[in-house]
Image 1 (cartoon, rainbow, N blue to C red):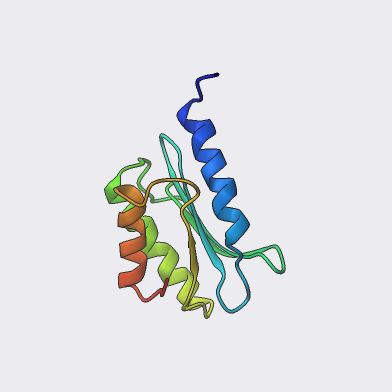
Image 2: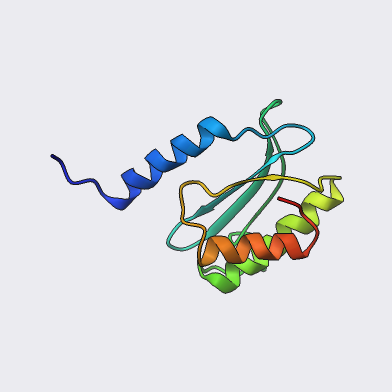
Amino acid sequence: MAIKDRKTIRQRIHARIRRKLRGTAERPRLAVYFSNQNVYCQVINDDEGRTIASASTKEKGGVSKSNIEAATKIGTAIAERATAKGVTAVVFDRAGFSFHGKVKALADAAREKGLQF
């Protein structure tokens, strides 16, 4: 039996999650991704295939790290941008990452700013 690396395992978990989750116009999908250097986040309407709002640490003036502090700032930013576009409720897509650490910090920051999961 072949040994699988963490990335492959996470991708399989993400595929299993995405079979069950779908963002609609009423409740778009809040998708997150964490690389070694950056944090990315998007609010997506899957019915239209359109990104409503996005935030990442690669933006100007952003923190260029992938840690809990950066995840908190991105969670706050995405919640503010989504509510400005009229989105109040979302479906959280953790992309196969464990709901712990950076993922939890981003989700908690978004909840504090008014997004409902």
